[in-house]
Image (cartoon, rainbow, N blue to C red):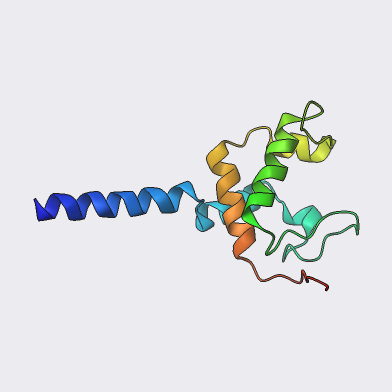
Length: 113
């Protein structure tokens, strides 16, 4: 019985970690979709000042933004031809993985008070 409880506990911990996003999978996705080509190799130096810095950004915000681009030009969506095309093939897990990876990176973002 103790072994069963321990196994279930490990399964729940692993499931919880995966549900929050997998950093390694997210890194692979940024390479696959060449996100760095617009957002910079370190995700802190975008090629255009109007493009956001992604490194260190909050996971919830990144997930929300990617899902909004996936919804497109509808209710609660975002309209950008490049981003809409990039996120269309992504699953919800892919989005969580991307958000986890980008959140884990060192950032140059600052909060001014």
